Length: 316
Image: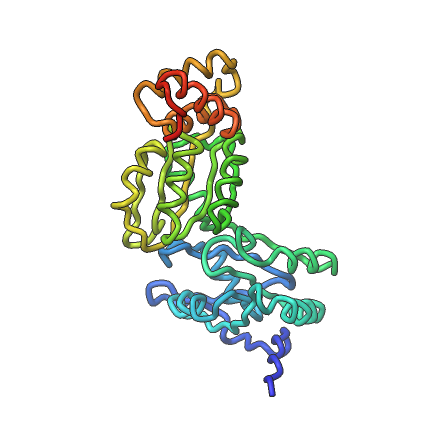
């Protein structure tokens, strides 16, 4: 028989004496958190990257709702926070949301955290926040660590406008299709990737977006943090030597300012120049990045020109 989920403590059952946290052996008291849902950003790697307000809130709420209690417990133990941890993730959300709403209805204070970074950013929580707002309860944002913003800050690429994609599709065909759509967005692109796919992703990025500048951000804020900056083609070329363990954020520069300005004749000129020195595949990648035209169109034109230039069928 499946065990009945334990209730979430309300202010009447939480222990006020346990509210507090420690920094470098100094014990600090934490006030009771205001009733409502507190969205607390937590470190993406280095546990020292947490705000004082976040520590006060985590120590002052009745419950911390988290994806994985084992991961969040590392943080609470580091700062000696005696918190009640309850799981909230995509697999139990339907059952957990009513219990959270019930506790909030009784005047409770609950913190929502993800395993790392800012809640709701490529993590569960949107439906909970929407239902909490609809029920008339307060929602508070506690800003802090974010791998998206950390990667943007170190990539040395334009930050005035960016588009966050999150994780790309896992299957190659769907991934390539999505990358072709992203290539037309006039903004710096930020996306997550996993170690077992990053080499394939880089190859596809180089093919579709060509010579754009990019950065690979691996294990941000952690002991083995590594940032690689180069063109997509250079990064793809060196992908075999890339350490694939860890978590990756890829940052890609926007298309060239004149990407949409190439005429058909200018596109042909670019392709002829590229085909004289490179394969059809590499020539197409460069022309797509420069022209902003769909890859299918550029590829078809490249095959026709290659056939004329080389007296063959143009395939490579």
